[in-house]
Amino acid sequence: MAAQIFLLHVHTSMDIVRKMTLSSRPESVDELKTMIKEKLKLDYDFSLSYQDPDFDGQLCSLVDIEELPQKAVLKVVRSESDASSVASDDTIILPHAITPDRTERWPDVFPVPAFSYEVELILSDGSVTYERTGKTVKLSRGQKHNILETIEFSLVAEALVSKHPCLKDLKFKMGNYRSKSTRAGFHEVAGNSGKRSRNNPDRQPPHTNIKRPKRAEVNFLPNFPRGEDGASLEQFRLQIVDEVQRSDKNLTLIAKLMQTTFALRRKEVINEDLPVGEILERWPALKIESQVCAEFHRIANINLKNHFYAELDRHAPRLQSLFRKKAARTGKVADVLGQLFLDVHVRRAAVLRALPAYLQEDDSGFVKQWEVSH
Image (cartoon, rainbow, N blue to C red; front, side, top):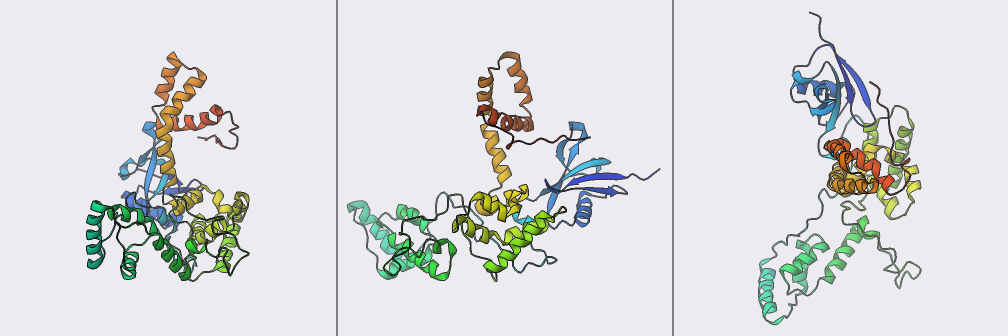
C-alpha cells in the first residue's frame, strides 16, 4: 500500500501562508506542532485548528491527530498572551527586549494596605471621632510619610479616604509622588514638569496642554529600555522601515523591534504630538494587522480582536433590528434573515457591511473583499 502524502496549507498569521508536505501522518498533534515550529521557524507556543470538510470548512481545534485530513488547511493560533509573539530570541541581536512596566489594568476598587501600628491606631481613633463629631485627624510629617511609602499610586487616595474618612484630603500625596518620580527620571510624570515658574517665565502655564493617560491606557509613556537611548531606538526604527519594504517580510523580527521601540513611539505620540499620517509614515509596521493588535495590547493590555468581536456580538441584535427597519423587511424575508444570522460569522459580516450603508457613508475604505479560489 502506497504511503499517504499529507499536504498542509499553514496560516501562521493574516500575512503569511506556507505550504508543507508530510510523507506520513505524524504520531501526535504535539509532533505535528514540533514539525511546524522547525519548518516555519516559529518561536512561540500555539495550538492548531483545521478547516473541517464535514462542516463546510468551519474551523475546528485539532486535538486528535487522526482527525487531520490528508489535504488540510491549518491555522496557527497563538497562546492567549500576546507577549509570546515578542519572546526573547538569542538568534536575533537585540540588546534589550522591553517588558512594559504594567501588565494589569487598574482595579475598580483599590485595596488599602495596612500601615504601621502607630498610624493604624491614630486612624482608628480618628475614624471613631469623625463619626461622632465630623472632625478630621491631623497627621504628623512622619505619619504622612508612612502612608506615602506604603501606597504606590496617588489614584488610590479615593479608596484611602473612603476607608478612613477622618483624612480630609491627600493633596500633598500627589505632589510628593510626582516630585520624587520626576527627579528619578520617570517619563510619565516628567512630561508635565518644566512648566512656567519664576525661574522659567517663558514656558507654558502649569495647566496648559496637560498630558494624562486615558483610563484604559495601562502603559502611557514608559521609559526607554535599559541600555537604550533615542539614537539606538532610532536605528531600530530605520531597521523596521527597511524590513517592511521587503517583499518577504520577517514578521518575527518586525514584532521584536516594534516591542523594543514602543517607548520611542509613545514619546512621539505624547510629547511631540505627531499627526497620524506622519506616525504611519515613520512606523509603517503599524499598517500590518498583527502589529495593530500588538500595539493595542501594549497600550491597554487588551486583546483587540477578542474585545472587538465581543462588543460586535453584544451590539449585533440591536443593529440587525435597525437595519431591518431601515430596509422595511418583514414577513418571510425577515425569517430568512433570522435563519442566516444564526451563524455568528454571517452575523458579524452582515453587521459590518450594513453599518456604512445605514450611516450613508462610502465603504470603499472600510471593507475589502477577496475572492477565494478553490
